[in-house]
Image (cartoon, rainbow, N blue to C red):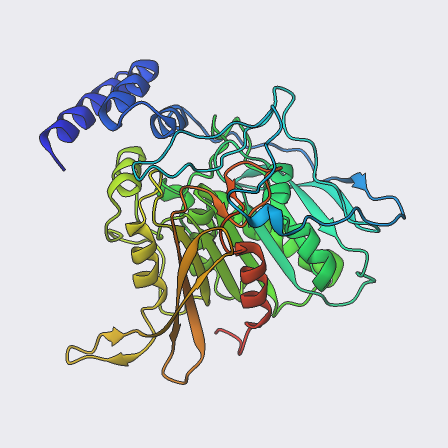
Length: 414
């Protein structure tokens, strides 16, 4: 860390200790540069964790009419030059240092409209409460669900997002309709984080059975039990702050989640407070004093853009180091050495990518790491109706679902 960073962080610490949060936010922005990072995490520092006593509830808020589904978008959606002009409620983000624009839709002043629900599907609104607090969540139930033991995918949104936004951007409900699985979208409450970020950087929210992980796990167990879903096909995935929390969930609850997907996220233990979160996001670096064990980590698929200026791509390397700890053959010091098969590809008119697949000693694929070249801080292959998406990349949602369905739990974890 350079002198400018050290002096700036010292000033931030002093202001926070004095309770001068607005000034601390401004100091963070000056230190790291004006932008989204300082605003998001500077305001997040002021959050507390009130516990609600409200009971769980459920009602249908979106249900598709029994009609023919609208026509799907064609190849033009995936072409950089032929993509349709975004509606006025969208704008393009500033160009990255490499000169490539990141497609970053923004909500209109009225917010994002709920994603169109596929014909026959239901999008219900529910809530869950335990000792750590209450969180709302939305649940997509596909038309093909008739009480059978289907898989469940838990999706965690990023900062400033919500379940409708994430569902629209990832188009996970459409995939759920095609493959007949349920999708749960827990929502971070603004009272618990002003920017609606999952508090992945707080030690109290990185532990099994505590804080936000206990709430997300509670949502997962509630849906599995109530709908009679397949215990061996439960998965968790997320974007940005949600990706960091998905990594925590997959490592802290390997007995609950058979596999995980992390998009533009960070490794468990990468931060313990606000200031270390800034350092990890800006510079990456190995997790320090990781609070979760990695001996029984669930299989993982990781996506990260190499032009991400919000969460440094080096964090993808640290995720690999965490998740691939048990792959490959031991070296002279007894440390496992991951063995990878690498392939490269290109989306027509869009981004190129490199996919490295890491196998364990028995040849099972445990980790896939996708590096999308030219992608910024955005969901690869996502739809323009959601925020932080870039349709020019490979379809992260489809690849995650494919990876998940290839990875049911192989054996009970003791």
